Amino acid sequence: MFKWIKFGDVALKMLKNALNLANIDDEMKNLLSKKAEEGYLPDPDSLLEEKPELYLFVAALHREIARFISAISLKSDSFIQEALGAYLLSLIMLLTFYARNKNKKIEEEIRRTLFEMNYIATSKGAEKERDFMENVRLIVEKALEYVEYLY
Image 1: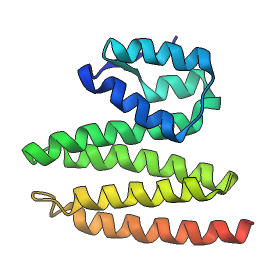
Image 2: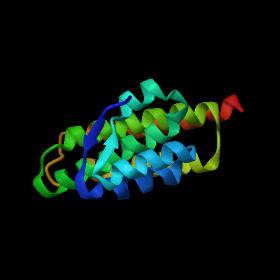
Image 3: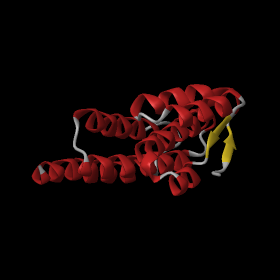
């Protein structure tokens, strides 16, 4: 069985947001909902290891974790690199999924994730991350362009 991480009261909202991007079977959805009501979400890496078919859900879960860390970082000017790292994991997974299953919704989610990352990187206290973010933006735009050649 995969590991669980305590998020508290926000777990259910994070789960609902992640489920908006990825469809999963009812049995898994019920398990996740029950645990989220208790304040827990699955550890994305251990979930992916056990259930690789939930790849898109794990990408969405990484982004929800990034949003959680970002909320903390915006209030305290700390954990900015951790937030960007979680967003980057989500972004990489979304790009990989998009390259194999090109669709407009995933492209929109990639752009939304990039926008959210940029917002964190341009926030107060994130001066060091601005150059990093510009490089990420250029790489993502190029990757999206290259996916067009695959289809």
